Structures are given as C-alpha cells and as structure tokens.
Image 1 (cartoon, one colour):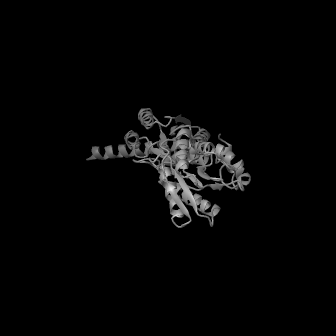
Image 2 (cartoon, rainbow, N blue to C red):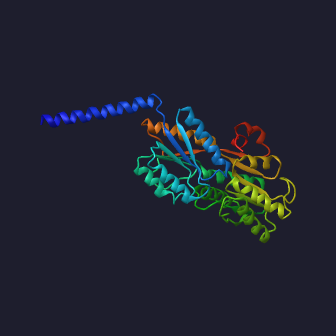
Image 3 (cartoon, rainbow, N blue to C red):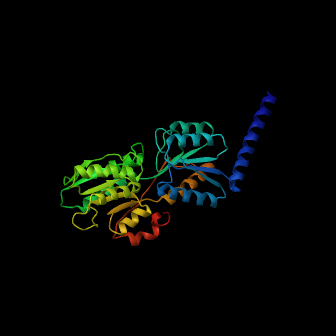
Length: 325
C-alpha cells in the first residue's frame, strides 16, 4: 500500500513539474512553429491574411510558414498531411473546400496539432474560426443595391464563387434575404463562376449579358471575379461610368486594391472591405491564448465597411487593399 502511495505521489509531482515547465516556457516566450495554409495567392485577400499572421508571429518570436497549394484541394491536403508529423505547434487553414478538408483536419488532431481557421470553416475538430459575418455582409450589400436603385424596377445577376466556399453561400443568402423584401428587384440568375479566375468570371457574365441585354446590376461574392466581370461588360460595349445612363452596377466583397481603384475611377459601385490583416494577426493571438491554456471562442466574427466613391478617401487609411496589392 505504501509503495502504491509513493507511486501516486511521484506521478502527481511529475504532473505538477510538467505543468510548471509548460507555464514557464510560455511565460519566457517559447518559440512556436506555426503554419498558415492559404487557398492561393491569386486573391490578395489571403496574402493580406498571411501578412498579419506573419507580422504577429514574428512579434512573439515565433517561426511563421505559409503553405500555398495554388487552388488545388488535393495539394492542400497533401501539404497538411506532410505537416502532421513535423513538430508543428499549430496550423491555421483557409480551406479550398470546407468539406473535403475534413480528413486532413482530423489527421492533424490525431497528431496533437491544434487547427484554427480563417474566413472559411473547415469540417472537423477546429479550435476556433475567425471570419467576417458573411451573411451580414450580404445583407449590407443587398441594402446598398436597394438604396442605389430605389424606385426603379431592375434585373440583378448574382455571380457566386466556388460553391464549396462557406463565404460564397453566406453572402448570397444575405443578399437574397434583403432582395426578397424588395419587389422592384428581380434576380435573373445566381450562377457559380466555378473558379476564381478572370476567364471564368468573364465567361459567366458574357453568357448572361447575351441573354439579358437589359441587365441593370451585378453582385459578385468576391473581388477576385470583378476584373473578368468588367471585361465582359466592356466587350459588350456597356462599360459606362457610375451615375451615367446605361451603367451596369457592379457590387462586390473583399476590398482588394484593384477593386478600390475601379471604385475610384467610377467603374465599380461598391465593395465590402474586410479586415484580413486583422484576421491574420488575431488568429495568432488566439493561438497564443490557447497555448497558454486559456479558453478561446469557437467562432469569432468581424465586421467591415461598404466602400463607395463617396467615402473611399475618408476610409483610405483603414483599407487593406491599399496596403497589399
């Protein structure tokens, strides 16, 4: 009995020592190896997220690393699989496909690697997801469209991104919620561009312009599709400045630098600017709190700004699109 008691004491002391060493290491600023798996650098939004991630990690004395699968979900899963056993302390993921990424997240968890997400919720055990409230984003942009076309009967085209992306689905739902309450706006279609490329956006827009020459406005779920949309409008001979007769309204989400330039020159009506640099910084801060044993919220939501030609100069100092181009 005495031997068993001594064993229990020894185990308890070992646990206390281990906890003490862990706490001391954290307090001393133990270096962490943290990774951010982005979908692709094609969209500057994720480059901005990584900028914030990298800056905050370096402020803590940590080692930040980026994984860029260039839009390939299979490559993203392979890259994450390779990280599972390499001594990574924490991984942040913006999934290319929120459902398909599940097995990679579960494997990381089996190897005691905590997973965090930015912008897109991944299926599987995730410590925390930091994202803009995308349903509210859709509502805000829907309200802007309704405001701009008050008293007019219009045809609206919604061009979605990849349908496996939760932000695309949430933003579309938000816009439709508002439009459903305004009988003067008719949604003529809500196709997915199928890919985040200028070619895909141009082809989708072109098809609808040909069958709907009287189209009044377009809402797209991401700035990544705006250049292709404008190219199709230009090719159809309908690229008219905002406020002029015949103008086709273009409304988007993200706040990328190129779209801000389009707003400034009168080609685009409005975009919802997010805070990707803040998201990147805050996910690292959330990791730190988790490493230190604090409880963190499972879902953390952010707001943003509807940017137009009227307020772009006022908002300029806060817009990430002027920092990362």
